[in-house]
Image (cartoon, rainbow, N blue to C red; front, side):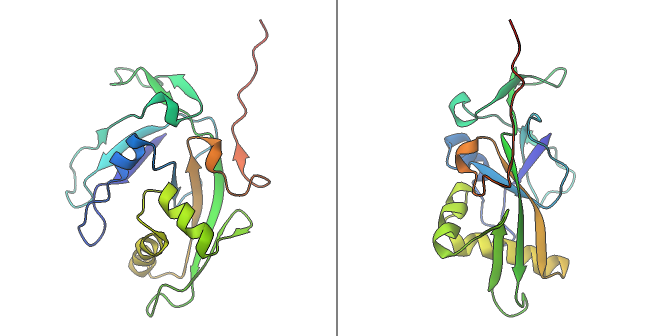
Length: 177
Protein backbone atom coordinates (compact mmCIF):
# COMPACT_ATOMS: atom_id res chain seq x y z
CA UNK A 1 0.00 0.00 0.00
CA UNK A 2 1.49 3.29 -1.13
CA UNK A 3 2.18 5.70 1.74
CA UNK A 4 3.34 8.98 0.21
CA UNK A 5 4.72 11.90 2.18
CA UNK A 6 4.76 15.48 0.93
CA UNK A 7 8.18 17.03 0.63
CA UNK A 8 6.85 20.51 1.45
CA UNK A 9 4.32 22.13 3.78
CA UNK A 10 1.76 24.45 2.12
CA UNK A 11 3.96 27.44 3.13
CA UNK A 12 6.80 25.81 1.11
CA UNK A 13 8.94 24.85 4.15
CA UNK A 14 10.39 21.36 3.86
CA UNK A 15 8.51 18.73 5.89
CA UNK A 16 11.40 16.32 6.60
CA UNK A 17 8.75 13.55 6.87
CA UNK A 18 10.97 11.20 4.84
CA UNK A 19 14.03 11.92 6.99
CA UNK A 20 12.09 11.62 10.26
CA UNK A 21 10.60 8.31 9.08
CA UNK A 22 14.05 6.95 8.19
CA UNK A 23 15.47 8.11 11.54
CA UNK A 24 12.63 6.46 13.47
CA UNK A 25 11.17 9.72 14.82
CA UNK A 26 8.04 9.55 12.62
CA UNK A 27 6.16 6.44 13.70
CA UNK A 28 2.76 6.86 12.08
CA UNK A 29 0.91 8.82 9.44
CA UNK A 30 -2.53 10.43 9.23
CA UNK A 31 -4.53 9.52 6.11
CA UNK A 32 -7.85 11.08 5.18
CA UNK A 33 -9.27 7.86 3.80
CA UNK A 34 -10.34 4.45 5.05
CA UNK A 35 -8.64 2.16 2.53
CA UNK A 36 -5.78 0.74 4.58
CA UNK A 37 -5.83 -2.43 6.69
CA UNK A 38 -3.47 -3.96 9.26
CA UNK A 39 -1.03 -6.39 7.66
CA UNK A 40 -0.82 -4.60 4.31
CA UNK A 41 2.69 -3.84 3.03
CA UNK A 42 3.81 -0.20 3.22
CA UNK A 43 5.58 1.25 0.21
CA UNK A 44 7.01 4.52 1.54
CA UNK A 45 7.33 7.26 -1.06
CA UNK A 46 8.15 10.95 -1.10
CA UNK A 47 6.40 13.32 -3.46
CA UNK A 48 7.16 16.91 -4.40
CA UNK A 49 3.69 18.35 -3.85
CA UNK A 50 4.56 21.49 -5.88
CA UNK A 51 5.76 19.64 -9.01
CA UNK A 52 2.69 18.11 -10.65
CA UNK A 53 3.50 14.94 -12.56
CA UNK A 54 6.92 14.45 -10.98
CA UNK A 55 7.47 10.77 -10.07
CA UNK A 56 7.38 9.68 -6.45
CA UNK A 57 10.67 8.65 -4.87
CA UNK A 58 10.49 5.29 -3.03
CA UNK A 59 12.37 4.87 0.24
CA UNK A 60 12.56 2.37 3.06
CA UNK A 61 13.33 2.35 6.77
CA UNK A 62 15.63 0.41 9.04
CA UNK A 63 14.30 -2.96 10.14
CA UNK A 64 14.17 -1.90 13.81
CA UNK A 65 11.62 0.87 13.12
CA UNK A 66 8.80 -1.44 11.99
CA UNK A 67 7.37 -4.37 13.87
CA UNK A 68 6.39 -6.66 10.96
CA UNK A 69 7.98 -7.22 7.55
CA UNK A 70 7.23 -9.13 4.35
CA UNK A 71 9.03 -10.01 1.14
CA UNK A 72 8.56 -7.47 -1.61
CA UNK A 73 4.99 -7.56 -2.96
CA UNK A 74 6.12 -5.69 -6.08
CA UNK A 75 7.92 -7.24 -9.03
CA UNK A 76 11.18 -5.42 -9.85
CA UNK A 77 11.00 -3.56 -6.54
CA UNK A 78 14.00 -1.53 -5.39
CA UNK A 79 13.69 -3.19 -1.95
CA UNK A 80 13.56 -6.88 -1.01
CA UNK A 81 11.41 -6.37 2.10
CA UNK A 82 8.61 -4.00 3.08
CA UNK A 83 7.22 -3.12 6.49
CA UNK A 84 3.62 -4.05 7.22
CA UNK A 85 0.91 -1.86 8.68
CA UNK A 86 0.97 -2.81 12.37
CA UNK A 87 -2.14 -0.93 13.47
CA UNK A 88 -4.89 1.38 12.25
CA UNK A 89 -6.81 3.89 14.36
CA UNK A 90 -9.59 6.21 13.32
CA UNK A 91 -9.17 9.93 13.94
CA UNK A 92 -11.30 13.04 13.73
CA UNK A 93 -10.33 16.70 13.98
CA UNK A 94 -13.23 19.14 14.12
CA UNK A 95 -12.28 22.80 13.87
CA UNK A 96 -14.67 25.10 15.72
CA UNK A 97 -14.35 27.84 13.09
CA UNK A 98 -11.44 27.25 10.70
CA UNK A 99 -11.79 30.74 9.23
CA UNK A 100 -10.85 32.28 12.58
CA UNK A 101 -8.39 30.08 14.51
CA UNK A 102 -6.91 26.65 15.26
CA UNK A 103 -9.38 25.75 18.02
CA UNK A 104 -10.26 22.11 17.46
CA UNK A 105 -11.71 18.98 19.02
CA UNK A 106 -9.38 16.11 18.26
CA UNK A 107 -9.76 12.41 18.96
CA UNK A 108 -7.99 9.20 18.04
CA UNK A 109 -10.34 6.26 18.43
CA UNK A 110 -12.38 7.39 21.42
CA UNK A 111 -9.40 9.05 23.14
CA UNK A 112 -9.82 12.82 23.39
CA UNK A 113 -6.50 14.45 22.50
CA UNK A 114 -5.61 17.16 25.01
CA UNK A 115 -2.58 19.48 24.76
CA UNK A 116 -0.23 17.04 26.53
CA UNK A 117 -1.15 14.11 24.30
CA UNK A 118 -1.15 16.40 21.24
CA UNK A 119 2.58 17.06 21.72
CA UNK A 120 3.38 13.34 21.74
CA UNK A 121 1.13 12.69 18.72
CA UNK A 122 2.73 15.56 16.80
CA UNK A 123 6.31 14.45 17.50
CA UNK A 124 5.49 10.84 16.55
CA UNK A 125 4.02 12.11 13.28
CA UNK A 126 7.05 14.17 12.27
CA UNK A 127 5.90 17.63 13.37
CA UNK A 128 7.91 19.95 15.62
CA UNK A 129 5.01 20.41 18.04
CA UNK A 130 1.24 20.20 18.54
CA UNK A 131 0.40 23.64 17.11
CA UNK A 132 2.33 22.79 13.90
CA UNK A 133 0.28 19.59 13.49
CA UNK A 134 -2.98 21.49 14.01
CA UNK A 135 -1.87 24.27 11.64
CA UNK A 136 -1.13 21.68 8.94
CA UNK A 137 -4.61 20.16 9.22
CA UNK A 138 -6.19 23.60 9.62
CA UNK A 139 -4.82 24.51 6.17
CA UNK A 140 -6.28 21.28 4.78
CA UNK A 141 -9.68 22.10 6.31
CA UNK A 142 -9.58 25.63 4.85
CA UNK A 143 -8.58 24.27 1.43
CA UNK A 144 -11.38 21.70 1.47
CA UNK A 145 -13.86 24.19 2.98
CA UNK A 146 -14.80 21.80 5.79
CA UNK A 147 -14.73 21.83 9.59
CA UNK A 148 -14.30 18.07 10.04
CA UNK A 149 -11.32 16.02 8.91
CA UNK A 150 -11.37 12.31 9.56
CA UNK A 151 -9.65 9.14 8.44
CA UNK A 152 -7.05 6.66 9.59
CA UNK A 153 -3.87 6.87 11.60
CA UNK A 154 -1.49 4.28 10.09
CA UNK A 155 1.16 2.81 12.42
CA UNK A 156 4.16 0.70 11.39
CA UNK A 157 4.61 -0.52 14.95
CA UNK A 158 2.16 -0.99 17.81
CA UNK A 159 4.17 0.98 20.38
CA UNK A 160 2.47 4.26 19.44
CA UNK A 161 -1.14 3.06 19.46
CA UNK A 162 -3.19 5.56 21.47
CA UNK A 163 -6.54 3.78 21.95
CA UNK A 164 -5.67 0.08 22.17
CA UNK A 165 -9.28 -0.97 22.80
CA UNK A 166 -10.50 0.46 19.49
CA UNK A 167 -7.41 0.10 17.30
CA UNK A 168 -7.27 -2.53 14.57
CA UNK A 169 -3.97 -4.27 15.36
CA UNK A 170 -2.23 -6.69 13.02
CA UNK A 171 -2.04 -10.22 14.37
CA UNK A 172 0.10 -12.42 12.14
CA UNK A 173 -1.19 -15.93 11.62
CA UNK A 174 0.88 -18.54 13.42
CA UNK A 175 2.07 -21.27 11.14
CA UNK A 176 2.20 -24.79 12.53
CA UNK A 177 5.49 -26.58 11.97
